[in-house]
Structures are given as structure tokens and as C-alpha cells.
Length: 269
Image (tube, rainbow, N blue to C red; front, side, top):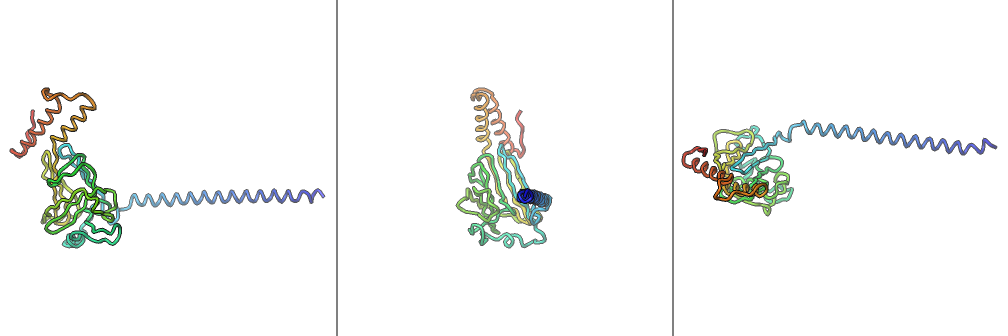
């Protein structure tokens, strides 16, 4: 009788032990799966970090100071890759193209490869004589053999030109492309013809250069920056005193004047 009474308790205890072991096994399996997933994810991440960029188009950044304005261009560098004579007007279409995806708007060239080409100015500037406020812009080019349209878009974060929208344009400037005898394999941007308050930015690729001039108001921006610094630290000297701000302004005026008349900068004493 005692044996018959104890049998259900033995069976119940065995069931508890069985289910406990099953739960432990399932837990261990879950831990193992998470561990394996982490290994695979880390492997993929490492492969992405050490692999070449898509198409071999390297990311690049070039920056220069014009007056007291910092100008920075971020872009990707496509290569000619034995396509000489087939870049401009073919690989880079004339005018605007209809991609058929993205925003499906008439689209200019992204002035590089992959992500947006961006250009950033820390102060207001003039682009070939046209005003452009300080900020970061998406940069596009509508190519033409005789005339190119440079487009500075307020949208600097979209991927490439897939979602280009003309309503986001901050400025459009028309410039003349220049053919050269020297071929540039990898697209690049360079600062040329530099003066104390201006520089020419050149987009160079294959045997073509697309130049545009950036000019800044050195005296205006230096004065504004000096006034801002004085407001934060000490009161600015008035115009009758020989303070730092008047000396810097005079120095910049002399440099600009000497560069214009003598072709070189004369440093004031």
C-alpha cells in the first residue's frame, strides 16, 4: 500500500527533473546560437573594414583656409580605368539624366562617386561672384561641353544623386570647363590661384578641369570674429586706440593690396 501511494510522487519528481533538464538544454542552445551569431557578425564587420571600397572608389577629403574661412570638400574618387575618351558626355551624361529610381527627378552628376559630394564653408562666401551663406552643401554638376552648371544643394545627407530635388537648391552657377592635355586617372579637387581672400577650386578628371572661384570678405568676417571674441573676453579697444582688431584689419588690407600691385605679399612690420 505504501509503495502504491509513493509511486505518483516518484513519477512527479522525475517529470520535474526532466523538464528542468530540458529548460537547461534549451537555454544552452540559445546561448550557443547567440555566440555563433556574434562571431559571424564580427567577422562580417571586420571584412567590411578591411575590404576595398565599392568599385575601388576611395573616399577623400581636401580642405583649405581662404582668409579666415575654412573650406572642406568630401568626395569619392572614381577612376578612368581605361575609359579614356568615354568619360565626358558618355559615362557622365550631358545635362540631366533620368535615373528611373530614387526620387525619379531629372538628376545632375554627383560630382564624384558613391555618397554625396559635399562642400562646407565656415563663413559666407561668393562663388564666381554669387553669394552663398555659410554651411554644408551637397555638390552636383550638370555637365556640358561648353558650359557646366554647378549646383549647391541644401540637402547634404542624401546618398549620391538618387534623391536630388531641385527645390532644395541653394545656388546654381554656370562655369566654363577647360580641356587639358594631361590626364588625371583618379578624380580630385584642388585649390589653385590662391590669394589672401580667394582661391579657385578645380574639379579634375581625365582631360577636363571644371573650375570655380571662391572669394571671401576678409575684412568683414575678421571684424565680426574680433567683435565676437571681444564680447566674450574683454571689451574691444575703440578706434582711437592701437588695439588688436585695427592692427589685424590693417595687416590684411596691406597684404591684399601688395598681392594685387606687386604680385607678392608684403608683411607689415
